Length: 239
Image (cartoon, rainbow, N blue to C red; front, top):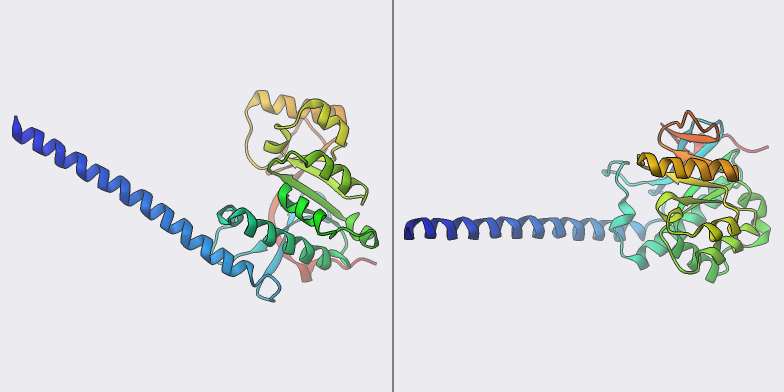
């Protein structure tokens, strides 16, 4: 009986050590990746940071993102950054994209955290002199903040088109959604049928555009992401 007790204790200790190793390794990898990204973030003004543009099914519509070598495009590297570094990174990324698309033809989409947008507003980064460039830009806002409605209303005066990420969209009340006059909803992943029905119903009632990774045969105003990627130098120059 004592032998089985000892074996059981040893098994338990080994199991705890394994769990500890897995957790420690996980956080070590996150810490390493976070340091790499923070170092990388500090080079955003250098030429080695490349902004790429993902094609949509509609002509001359692109989603801007940055190229981080060695990381699959399916992984969002920004999720590894602390919020203050994320805000700084996305803010500088926004300015770089705005400069690059100024003389390019098309409509462009860029995903930004609401806290980044509030930071840009606080720094007076939005100026009316750039209104023509703003008309090309569609901001996809993700995450939630208590000032999100005021931020969207502020952005609208610059003729920026505003999309909400689905998870952010679900956090707002119906009355709030009607007050901000959204342009569309971004859907990155598959959604359950009841959620899908609600989103399509709301989109139809408000004539919204859906951004998605796959087509919605029962909703015409859907723009689907494709796998084709272009460099900024490959985009058509505006006339």
